[in-house]
Length: 339
View 1 (cartoon, rainbow, N blue to C red):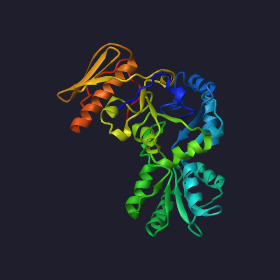
View 2: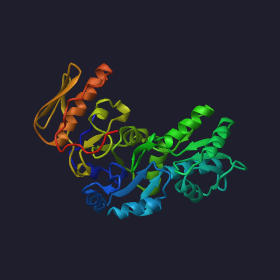
View 3: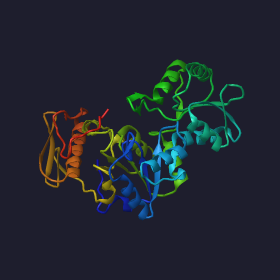
View 4: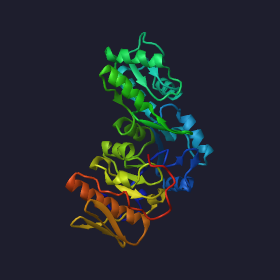
């Protein structure tokens, strides 16, 4: 269930790890107010990290994009799944090891910075690393798949099944990983969220003993926070929405829910619960005959807290998500497609 914070959430942490798409920006536009809110975090002497599963871009590229959107960022603030994958390979195979790299610039640069030697062919390679790369060729995928099948160790930067593009959601790196895995019968070691390596690499690089993960996805950001045992805050500016929360198993549930990053600077009360009904701040939520019903009035954040709590009580008791198809949250109409 959600946890209570009597003081602004950010005050309990010395590192805030921000996911990017859906938290800092959507497509090519910064989310309203995000730059000012991230600066407020820094003004409290809290470390800021930008954490991305995208392995195709270097930290320099990511920082430049953020700067172009008006969000202050240094390359050292950015941690990518390619860097986490490189750390795994360097720890396992040592400096100077040749790694067959299947991916874009971000993967090659990360391997080199870790003291490894990215190569395009199998001669001398001790392992395979893959990451998203729009120019990866099918013949290279076939070669890697056969090498993995025949026993070469395989580290994948991430398993994201989709990637946002100007023409909508498209197949992500996870589709490539699934192709190689199904052919070879081998599951790779995965570096990116929700697995531990990227989260641990972020703390190692940026610093902090009391981290908080802020994200918009339950199955990467929230699950990744659970994996390393740290709190998380879900913001509702990106992908996850009511139907996702209603069906969230415990390992996908956030510690806190906020409509925007302003939630970092606010206390977070929790609903009281009686016989499956959650109540807070003038709102009351229950699941009646399998359907979520929310009544009352109050602020938007408390509506989400009672709705999530009632849905989770129902899910834990019955094993079935509540029907939220006709439930309309308060606030502005949603403009982001929640796919």
